[in-house]
Image (cartoon, rainbow over all chains, first blue to last red; front, side):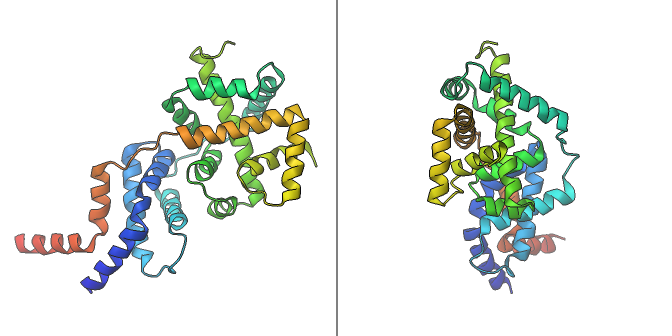
Length: 188
Length: 88
């Protein structure tokens, strides 16, 4: 019995443990603090190991682990998410359109935002996005999941994934631009 | 195609989600000819690369890693159970 468990653990160690860092970072972005992120990670791996024996071999283990974490998060940690109020998005859209029609071009933006903002500024700007948009950007741009996998993960059609990514990145630009303005990297 | 739809297709194009070469060429052509779409394209591409390259990835703290592995490693669990029984 113990031998069987040890054999299973060594397989789990090979297939699942390498994803601990991405999962910890995802937990950190979802819960917003290190303590909850650590607990969520523990719960995720405990549940994952419990179900691992019955899991079909050859599964996309990374996506499966993210899914286990998602349900653990929804069950125990989800706080009232920052709802995106329509008027907020209208304001973002207006800000974005102003930028588009001002003299700023994309390459100038690249120089000002990419070079001058710190990694912390970028993490903060991403963390302040509403949850529905933040999750999709993390899964696409950091974890490099396909639209199909993301749609499956968040349980929405692919068109919604595409639309949220598009709008989420516009919101992110607005946050970063405002941050750069506040820090004096960009003149108003 | 409605403007909003084209903008979203640019996002999908940047993410490598459009595989049909005719569609890809059509999107490239529109980006080339339309300054608004060009701006959208540059913004979407810039945000994608900023998140991918500059987002601070933190390693799992050693203490947390140890606790996670301690919870599931059967040989550790067995030894813990064995010694706690002996000590009690």
